[in-house]
Length: 59
Image 1 (cartoon, rainbow, N blue to C red):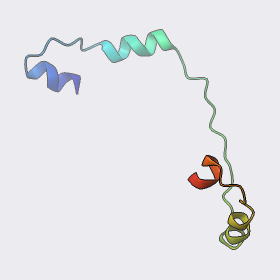
Image 2: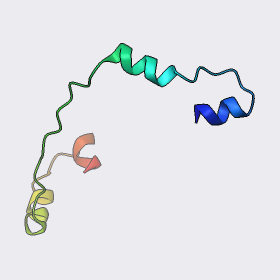
Image 3: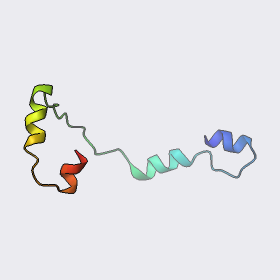
């Protein structure tokens, strides 16, 4: 994207992404696997959501 902007004549820093990566360092995020609910358990799960809270409504 930055190369495209530079080709269009816009004033961009082509090393911006490299600079940001150097400043931020390595990511500390470690992905965690969360198993999905089986389809057979879904009706009982939705039935257990009695309170109309925003979280329950989002589900």
